[in-house]
Image 1: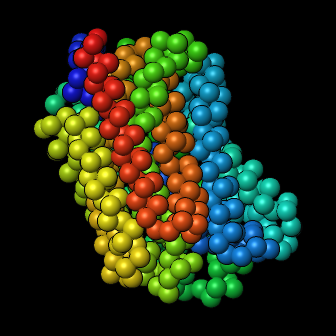
Image 2 (image 1 turned 120 degrees about the horizontal axis):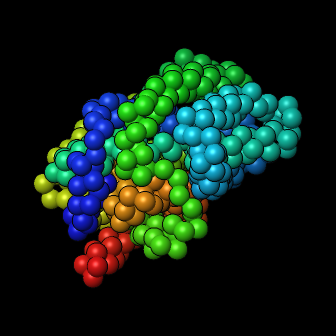
Image 3 (image 1 turned 180 degrees about the horizontal axis):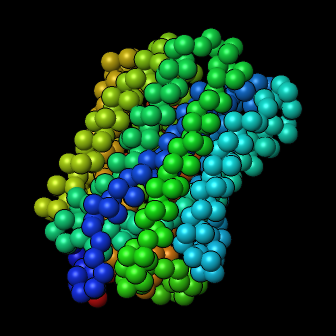
Length: 436
């Protein structure tokens, strides 16, 4: 994954390697892996907006309960870098197959565990603590699920096609959201509120566990194959000392985390946050709004595909920068649209999803070529963790608090700050590469 200003060292090494593997096979592994992870991600995110405030925080009003729920939602992103560090150690000692098996087993266990957590009415404060515990375990497991396949894919395709292949893994986000939102829309439409809060909300977490099992075997089939192990060894795609990596490439970790800020901030503003807003301050039907978001997710998937074509023509960094400008423009209209009733809110969702697809399609690892081969595996993993932590972890919490305390214009200010962060990071990256 590179920017237009980076060198072609990774590409050259990839072409000189003797092992040959089809990029399409790697792409399948990336899409399967990311789809399963995002399904888990969105099942919890949707539940945290629609269900958990009533199930785990009935002792406060709905708004305060949603803010508490979003605070626990953020725990996974805080834990994720620690999971990466822990599982890098496991990989160094026992190999990638063992690491991935342990991480996805932990992810499935934590996800299924959430399904069994009793309500506050049954267990009191202990129920909240259990929810926070399992959510933290999800973050640790997601950090450990990094398999290096996106980097392997980027280094195993022609330079002029990297934008196209980079977007494939990003398709997991809209696909995961479509399935998760579809499940919740079905439950909302077919269960009474009492049944939904009593037991119906638990069903999606069991589905997530089953999908994790399938994804585990699909990914293991790739990462333990001899040709993939050989190729990753040739390209030096393996764990390195985090301390040495930060000393040598620490500034690129920070730049990479902020380069995706605009896209990651928008990510939760059009997926999780609007659900809480509609439930709290609108008379709209939740199933109908979820269906609107599903339509938006389909548009986002098409936009992600389009981003691959665009990036291969003008460059990944230029695409990301141009979309940051687009997000900045959108931030000026977003407050008005969100407060303009059902039609305005529909425009807010659909336009936001299209912008999200175009920007998110090239957001992951747009500057990871700066790490070179030696530090790319570890550097890309930590950069991704920090990007999610800075850009997305607290987005639903901050957005809901700002809008309820100070008004809708602050949602625009939040998005604008993310877009500015992206532009500053890309500008700094370009300047550093120019000097080098």
